[in-house]
Each structure stands twice: as C-alpha cells, then as structure tokens.
Length: 261
Ligand code: NAP
Image 1 (tube, helix red, strand yellow):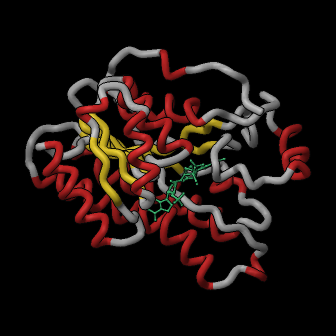
Image 2 (cartoon, helix red, strand yellow):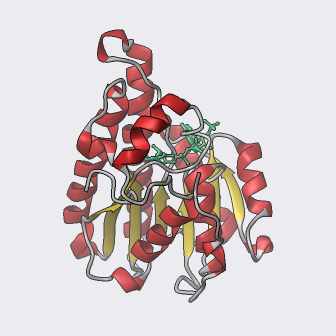
C-alpha cells in the first residue's frame, strides 16, 4: 500500500545526549519512533505492555548497547511509576523526552459499545497519557535542573473528525488533543514543550484489520492516494522533540497524506 523508501537513513543527529522514553515501543509507530530517535542520537527507553515485542524493537536500534527496555502498562499508575523509576535507575538519569504512543482501537457502533470497551479505549489512549505525562513531568521538574523537556502525544485525525463505529476511540483521541493543549500551556514556562501528532491511515498491526471494502472507501479521500509508513510519523515526532521545533507548543500536526485537511 505505502510507497517504498527507507527514511530511517536520513540523519542530522539532533538528539545526541538526550534520553527518550517511548510508550507502545514494541510495534508500529512506536517502534518506528524508537528507530528514528536512536538514529538521531538519543538513548531510547523502549516501553510496552508486551515486553517481548519491546525487546525485539531493541534489536533493531543503532547503538543497541545504550538503549534499554522496560515493561509498562500505561493504564496502570503503579506500573507507570515503577517503569519510570526503572528507566532512571538503568540509564543513570531521567528521560527528558517522551513519546506517548501506546494505544488500542476497539471498534463498535455507539449502541453496541459496552462499558469494558469504552473503558479500555479511554484507559489506554487517554488516561495512559495522563498517567505517563504526570510521572514524567513530576520527576523532571523535581530535579530542578535546567533540562529542557519535550513531549509528543500520538492522537489521531479521527480525534478531530470523529468516525462511525469508533466512538470510544475518537473520544479518547479528541481528549488527547485537548489534554495536549492544556499540558502545553501549563508546562511551557517550565521548559517542557508539549505537542501532538494526528496520524491518518498508517500501515501498522493496528490498521491491518481494516477490510478491503473499507480501504476502497477511504483511499479516494486521501490526496496522496496511499497509506502512510510508520517512519513518516516518526520523522515528525523527532522534529517535535528536537530544538528545531523550539517555538512550537500545543501544536497538532496532521500526518495524513492530506486526508481531512
Ligand atoms: P500498534 O502497532 O498496535 O502498536 C501499539 C502498541 O501499544 C502495541 O505494542 C501494543 O501492545 C501497545 N499497547 C497496548 N496497550 C498498552 C498499554 N496498556 N500499555 C502499554 N502499551 C500498550 O498500533 P499503531 O498503529 O502503531 O498505533 C500507535 C499509536 O498511533 C496509537 O496511539 C494509535 O491510536 C495511533 N494511531 C494509529 C493510526 C494507524 O492508522 N495505525 C492512525 C492514527 C493514530 P499489544 O500489541 O500487546 O496490544
């Protein structure tokens, strides 16, 4: 579906000396973020609820020795706090860069959405970002050092447009957009920039379940006439974490091939 090409070979090493924690780093966009951030010189803390998948990501990173893997369930406060402590212990310093990428997409029409699937979508996609960002920012601000931090939240274009059969998912992603702006406003004067990315249709295990029929309907709505590659989202994430985007705060950057612009 996606055009071929490996953007992980582009490098300007903008993140040398930084420690970057990525949630959902075991798959899809999160894995691509780990790869691009490592290429940019960051030491990466790969976290995921699926430890085996996170370990596999580690094997794909340049400079493998310096990166670490930590299990983290973003929807569980205890797991998040333990993982943050473990990341600090193993790296000898706190992460100052964060990518909130872990996510689930459980689809159902509103009338068929049960409490469990509503809570799972909101619990991972929205509460997860609340818990991880709170733990990250608390630790970073407690150090009192003048370390510039940056956070990128992975929302979705559907958080802006809504989508039939995706009420809980789209509600969670709309929440991520407004949470991003509030965090951005609260932390801007404390040297932590917060922004978010709104991907469109990206080739990952999450989108693999979309039927041929649905794809036929979606494709004409994408001006680039193709789905995106995870690396194409990861490049924007790396830019937003770097000082190249030093005047960007509370931005919602669409990476959609032009869908719903
Ligand atoms: P993916 O390939 O399914 O990756 C998501 C990762 O998050 C998986 O490794 C998953 O583990 C992990 N995860 C699930 N629940 C978790 C939890 N409670 N704590 C920690 N990790 C957890 O999906 P993706 O497409 O890369 O999605 C990444 C982000 O992009 C998500 O926030 C998604 O909503 C967003 N997004 C994706 C698309 C798209 O078209 N792919 C479009 C817009 C936005 P398991 O596999 O074990 O569940």
